Figure (spheres, rainbow, N blue to C red):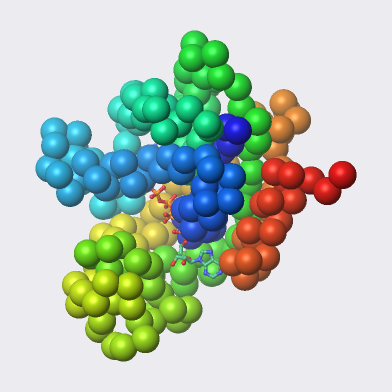
Length: 217
Ligand code: AP5
C-alpha cells in the first residue's frame, strides 16, 4: 500500500502515520523527520536545512524529491509506505508521479486530514518530546507522570522543535495555504482524494483513517 497523508502542520499526520504503520506494516516516510535527522547529524544537507526548516520555510523541491527517491529504494519500503509531509507543492506532486512510474509503483490513497487553525497552533506550541527516546508529550494533553521525568526512559532531557514557536507556526500555516493546499485538486481530479476530520480525538481519527483504508464490505 502506498499512501499520502496531507494536512496542515499539527493536523496529526505524524501521529496517525505511526499508528497506521503499526496496524498495516507500512513504513512512515516523513520528510520533516528526515530533514531534522540531517540537521542533528550536521551533514551538508543538514546545514542548509537548519536555516530553512527552523524558520518554518520549505526546502527546495529538488532536494526533497531526491531525499524521497532514495528513501523509497530502502528495503523496508518494499511492503509500502506512508508519505507524511510529501508532496507539499505541485512540483513535488508531479515529480512523485514520475518517480513512482519509474519505479513501477502506484499510489493507492491520498488522505487529507482537516483541522482548524486555532487547534493547530495549540497542538504545535504545546508539543515537546524526550530528547533521549523521542516519547511525545504536550503541555495540555499529555504531561509526564512525574514532572520533568520521561515516563518511558527516565531521562530529564526534553526538547521542543525550533519551528514550533508561535511565529514560525504561523509561517508554516501560511505556507500550507499557499503552496500545499493547491495540490488537493490535483488528486481530487484523479478521484483518489478522501478527507477526514482531524479535530476529533486520536482514536476517532485513527478509526476514520482505517475506514478509508479498509472500508466495511
Ligand atoms: P514536518 O515535520 O512534516 O512538519 P509539519 O507538516 O509542519 O507537521 P508536524 O509534524 O508539525 O505536524 P503533524 O501533522 O505531523 O502533527 P503531529 O502528529 O505531530 O516538516 C517540518 C519542516 O520540514 C517543514 O516546515 C519544512 O521546512 C520541511 N519539509 C518537510 N517536508 C518538506 C517537503 N516535502 N518540501 C519542503 N520542505 C519540507 O501532531 C501535533 C501535536 O498534536 C502532537 O503533540 C500530537 O500528539 C497532537 N495531536 C495529534 N493529533 C491529535 C488529536 N487527534 N487529538 C489531540 N492531540 C493530537
